[in-house]
Image (cartoon, rainbow, N blue to C red; front, side, top):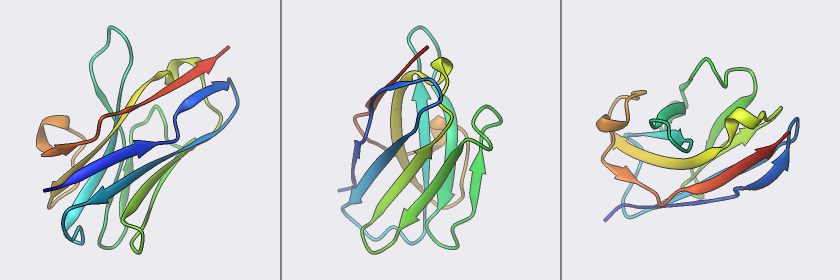
Length: 123
């Protein structure tokens, strides 16, 4: 059974940085795609960044491009989201998600989800 556990959220001032982690377990993820999604209060969930385990190809939403970096550590089965130059509008619960196969920026395409970690950016 696939399990995804996020960590690393917190409160940070605008312009600051945070690194989120997503520890994955339960199977071999070499043919999986991993995504980071976020949901702000009163808003729909949106895609932030994604990565393929194999090859490491990445994709970013325009809103985070140039500020966020997604990466993975194959040995630790962990995906990271390095978030720099944070803005108040980045405040949201951030979720890690996994699916077998291609990388998508659509949440409904993902089969497994973590419990989420809160990121709050103060102005």
